[in-house]
Image (cartoon, rainbow over the protein chains, first blue to last red):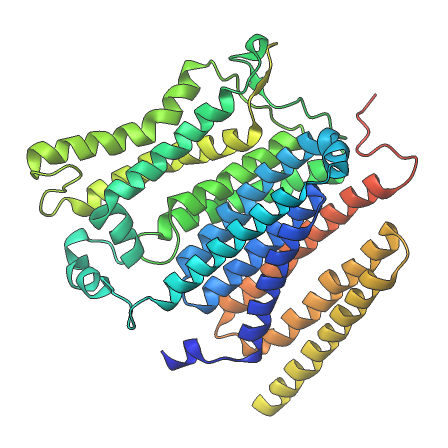
Length: 317
Length: 101
């Protein structure tokens, strides 16, 4: 374990870069530049997680924290470009400056005090997890925690992205409701983007499914895999090779809710069979976890892609 | 034999680092977007390629070596497509990704 904490040049350099990029992202006045800084910051943060031995977290940070969130923020920055100039000419008053500085300083010191006050060694349930992992049938302790010991958290996570999508859709103008999200992408069919969108998806889909499948035993899982699948679909959409589906299609909506519905059904069945919500009966834990993962994977990929695709914008078919 | 392989690794990785250094200096010093892109591709293509080449003898088995090569190929694909797209936006007077007539 010692080498994990050993301070070498790489670790120190990485930590400094993360801090500098974080400050730069906050200080940058141009929102596009800030978003680019945020994406680079997320990728470096993923490297930092690898350095700490948290490969699962690193994958999530790279795929969702940096990748999909970055794409969302880029879209937002593009929409805000019109208001960028007037907003920049506004100078906040002295009182605003003072209050902002006080709140920021207060939050930072509260966080610093909280970190310094953490008990050493930190309280951990790792031993309990290791002792009980056999009962779940999976070998990746993180998957065991996420889908057996703390399955209710994962259920809420999978549901909250669905709520996020409903939130995005609710921004649609009335005339476009039920139509296709985002603009129609007209791109040179012989251009570099169309080329990339033809070559990359076969590889990306294999890697995405692999990351999802390996999640039971090694770092990986449905969220990271689904983010990759979503990215491949979005690439084909942005390159004009595919189009977003009409959001009033019944099949689409059923596919979106299928994952969470299966998860909740398994949870409700647990009340009757195992005596607790999301309780798994003896010996059936592994098949039920696999069932939930298989049901959530496509729903999550679809939901994540449609969140990035944006609110319905085109009423025509 | 292992000394020769180690020597090969050191030389190839050092050569790769030279390209990364040159690419970074170019990125910081060149006057416009197109020349900066040109500098960047040197780091991505040759720099990473030489580092991967140098690391091949150190890979644990053929599978790891193959993964290293695949990483390099994917980076080539990504950086080539991205720099084409950026160049089309940066070139004055040329519409980015003109739709077909």
